[in-house]
Image 1 (tube, rainbow, N blue to C red):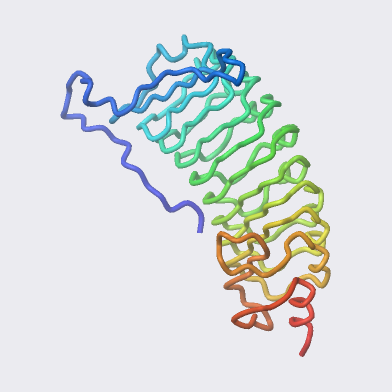
Image 2: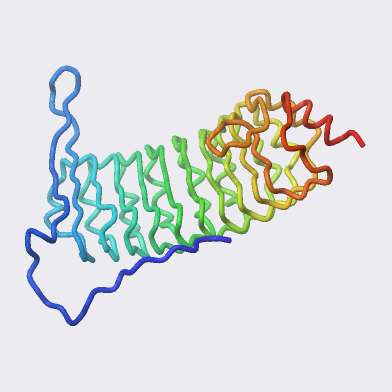
Length: 289
């Protein structure tokens, strides 16, 4: 399991030419206004073809609050990113970035960071200084762990580390009690620590396509859970107290439905094609001979 994607990031070295307008697929700068008509955030969308570097003029746009640099061919983010002191949303998805600078930690107003679909093997520890960060999406990279200092991201609500190379859930994750959404699918995770119960605000936990053999009893203390997906693991038995997760409601078969997803696991007693009723009936079914 783990990340299996690939991108073509190399340029044609035999071709040298000046950039033309045709090479620019999107270049937009506009402002948002609030209900009172006052000028709001400045949004900057910059998408080029065959571009490996971020143009220097971007670092002089200090009023920018939302910056979209996704789906380019960017190979790095320079330390100059620290100049974007008002940035709230930064989208770097779908590039060829192998390293993020420690200067990201200077973006003290940053609330949303997308770096999905890159070539990152680690994250800068300094990001923990972005204390306003609410959404961190790192899927489809080569990450095997997270810095322990990320436990200080006290406003983080959504964390996506799916499609990476995690063997364990990073210890820092269990200290982020504000988490409501946690996606760890398609890694190599072998177990869920008992300390999962510290995530008392968690509503959505997706940890499908891993190597988990059992669910800890403490997962039954996450009474805010509305969606628990453990499809495609190695689970044989389920905790007897699963019925305590009343917000899960039922067994869900459709991937888009909320509920408890436990499809394609080697349960000691396989589920029937359709299980009627709530989780208490499921537990009874599994316990009965």
